[in-house]
Length: 487
Image 1 (tube, helix red, strand yellow):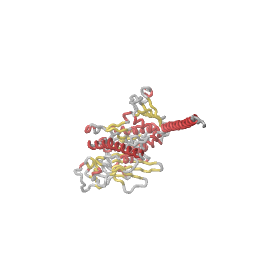
Image 2: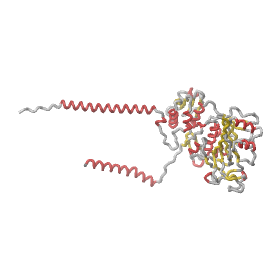
Image 3: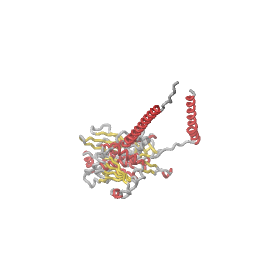
Image 4: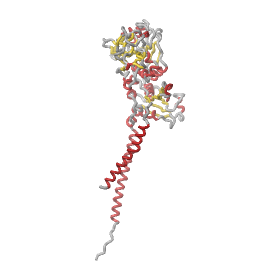
């Protein structure tokens, strides 16, 4: 009887260990490969522009840049450096994201942080007063300083009544304006006509014009023979008396040579008291309606006052940003504008603001005693703002804008429509001065609404999401597990 040999498991164990080693080696190699791919992918994504990797899902586009900013950045022909003046750890995250958007959108924009404690001499070259998160924007042409206090806007108009105030993020408008300023070849000049009792712009409106990179000067044609050659736009703001017979041909000559005009008027105290100014605008197919406008549709006026008009915005480069954002324009105490039915081929007149068809003009003017239409009153609709283009020659145009209410540049009226009036005024100036890429960018509100609910609803939702749904998930899992084990 043969002896049974003792089994030799050494070779089998060796083969098992070798196979286990190979499988483990493959797993480790696969894990290392996945890790390397993950690291490489993260490095690649971090190198991509912020505009590719960060998406804004906020309702008001808080972290997005507007079409106007994109036009400015696309049109850059020189490098711009934005120095972010901030101490380490004090960075404003919203401003940081905005700066990343700018840098990612254009190769001409570079961002550099400068700690004022580490680089005091550098900062002092540009400004004496420094706040964290201020910006210094510089090109090879010029530089400008953007204070942190200009990046956020505070509206205290309702504080007295509600104890609250509104905050808006104006980082994009401030930064785009600064870039436009430092890269522009020459800044446009706006001349305000004087000598006829004209009004001056308020401090808020004047500051806004400066931020649009428009230089303001005054012009008295009673002492000057001609409109200056560097005049990009002439403004006649609420004149209390008419142009003189000597001034009329001077302004006509200026416009015939491609000059631009912004005219803002109030209703006349007496009909026909501005014959020279009326004659000037008649050259361009627009005339003034006698009296004060009253709205017959309550959807077109505010504060239960039919002469506080809320006109329709009509489609134009000037009005498009306001229309898309849903802003109103408030035009209190206005007169109508009428466009001639037949215009010369060289003239193009476009409505900017229009009343409803139920509006009418009270010929009694400032002496009106009723808001009802009376015999002799003029039926609407009427224009409250028009944009005129006169094609003088190939490549030479003259542009004019006429608004028919001084309320357009009134601070209190502007506050009632959340800055809509000021934006329209600035957009008009930008269009006349050839700055269509810098048409006013509105600040973005930081206000938000709380979801308020009663206690019963809150308790019911708590029971649903904290109790019932988790229990249902556990029971479903237990049932599935039981069925699989007993198959």
